[in-house]
Amino acid sequence: MKDCDLTVRIGKMALKNPVIVSSGTFGFGEEFEDFFDINHLGAIIPKGISLKPMMGNPPPRIFETEGGILNSIGLQNPGFQEFIKNKLPYYRNLKTHLIVNFFGNTQKEYIELARRFDNIPGISGLEINISCPNVKKGGIVFGTNPQMAYHLVQAVRKATTLTLIVKLSPNVTDIISMAKSAEEGGADAVSLVNTFRAMAVNIHSKKPELGNIIGGLSGPAIKPIALRMVWEVWQAVKIPIIGMGGIMSAEDAIEFILVGASAIQIGTANLINPKAGIEVIHGLRKHLIENKINHIEKLIGAFG
Ligand SMILES: Cc1cc2nc3c(=O)[nH]c(=O)nc-3n(C[C@H](O)[C@H](O)[C@H](O)COP(=O)(O)O)c2cc1C
Image (tube, rainbow, N blue to C red):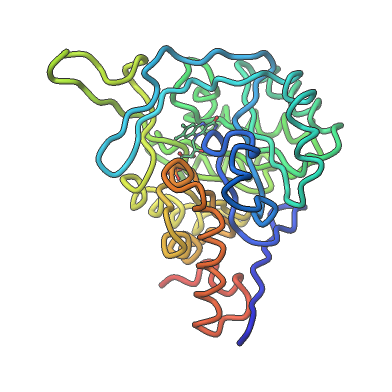
C-alpha cells in the first residue's frame, strides 16, 4: 500500500487529517511558520477570544512539573475586534481550517460572540470553551453544571450555523452527563479535555509556583485520565469526539482514536517540539500504511 486516506469529518468540516493544534498552545499560528508548513494541519485553533481584551493573570504563569506543565495564563487575548482586524486576515490565506475558540463571562456574551463570528468569512468552526480553570468566570460555571451547559449550548447553537464544538472540562465528577448535555443542546462535536486544576509549591520561599496559585495541568501526566474520559464519552454520545490531553506522538494520537476520537488536538507538545503537529501527521500515515489500513476512520473506536 502506497498511501492512505486521513480525512475525517467534524460537523460541516472535512479535515484533510485528524490533527488539530489546540487553543493557547500554538499562538496565532504564524509563530510556527518557520518550523513547518502549517497548511498541512487538519485545523488550527488559536488562543481563546473574548468580547473585550483580557490581560490575563499575574506572573509566573507557567511552571514545569514532572510529565507536564502548569499554566495560569488566565485567557489573555486581544479581544474580538482586534482579532478580526489584525489576526483573521492571516488565516484567510491558509489552506487549513480555522476553528475559533471563544468564551464569555455570561450566556449573553457567548451568544453575542457566536453571532458575530457567524457572519465572518474565513472561519470554519467554533469551539466554545466552557472549561477554563484559570479565570473566575471564564466559562467554568457552565462547564461543571450539565443543566447550565445544556441551556448555554442550545442558545449558542441558535446563534450560529458554523460547526459547533463544545470543549469540556475534566474537572467534573461525571464527564458523561456533560457530554450528553452538549449533544442534546445541539453541538456538532465535543472536544476533551481541557486542563486539570492543579498547583505547585516552592518549599524554600513557601510560596506557590504560580502567581495565581492554582493553574491547569496539561501534558503527558494527564494522558491516561484524558483517554479514560474520551472512552467513556464515546460510549455515551453519537456526535464526533475530538480527543486531547498529553498527546506527544502519533502513537498517543492513535490511542485516542482507538477509544473513539474522530480527531485529536495537540497542545503542550507544541511548546516542547514545535514540529509535533507535522510529526504526528507523518506518524499516523506511516502507521496506516504499515498496517495496511486504507482509511483512518477504520481506527475510530476500534478499541476492545
Ligand atoms: C499555555 C496554555 C494555554 C492554554 N489556553 C487555552 C485557551 O485559551 N483556551 C482553551 O480552550 N484551552 C486552552 N488550553 C488548554 C489546551 O488547549 C488543552 O486543552 C490542554 O492543554 C490539554 O492538552 P495537552 O495536554 O496536549 O496540552 C491552554 C493550555 C496551555 C498549556
